[in-house]
Amino acid sequence: PSCESDERCTFCSDGNPVPNPDFVGGDLIGIPGSTCGEGDIFLQTVPADDPICDTFRSASSLCGCEIPEDACYLCSDGSRVPDDKKKQLLLPEVNALLLIPGIPAIISTCDFLEAVLFGNAILNSQKCLKYQREYFEQCGCPIPPTMPIVNASDETSFTAGVVTTTEIFSA
Image 1 (cartoon, rainbow, N blue to C red):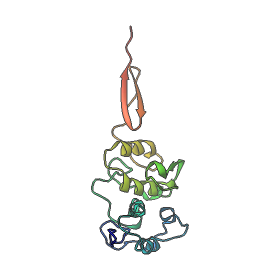
Image 2 (image 1 turned 90 degrees about the vertical axis):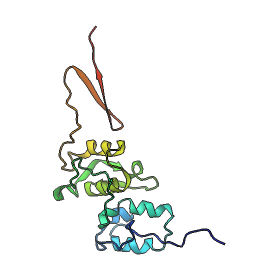
Image 3 (image 1 turned 30 degrees about the vertical axis):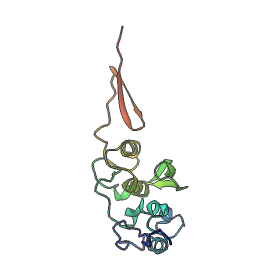
Image 4 (image 1 turned 60 degrees about the vertical axis):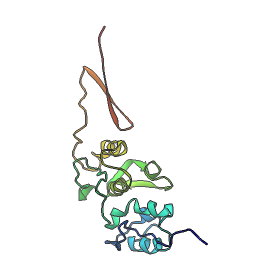
């Protein structure tokens, strides 16, 4: 007897059909030119508890699936990446392995990075803050409100997304 679940994976975690099946999400699916609908059909062959299911769902907002309530938005004010910046190439490119273990891919555009953050980073987490600070300018987002202003009396640095301030004292 098998203990495996018979439940199948769906692109959208709520089980609804993909809202934008014709969207060409080759970066997401890993097959250039593939659509979200083709990815959804493939996922129907995958058990819901298979890790590949979570991998595909991690950027499912590109296909129109719902964005989780506690999702990290690339723009710290909660707005979406502006339309004129969605296809902006990220330099340096973001390695997807840093965000999604098991995906050997490069996240190359602002809209793809935003979708991956929706699926893999919780609002206000260190991972979320790190990517907001690193890519806000390239992706057309407003300046994050937590960006510190450096002046002569203190030294500020970013370490793994955490802002640390060390006062410099004179003897």
